[in-house]
Length: 63
Image (tube, rainbow, N blue to C red; front, side):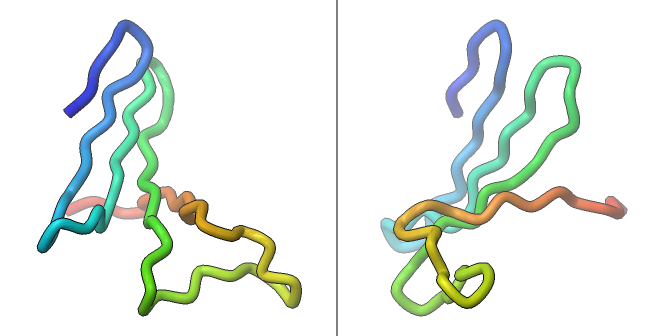
């Protein structure tokens, strides 16, 4: 976990790989980043120009 005055970041590691990154900005909506891995295609559109970056997702419902 990394935390400063403005943001809190938590990483989920599984077998040495980063699987999920949760970002909680102070005073803002939390979101997750799903990092690109060898077996996951996160391309958006025909070009797929995301490269090694992750895909940002916002949870709609939480139970």
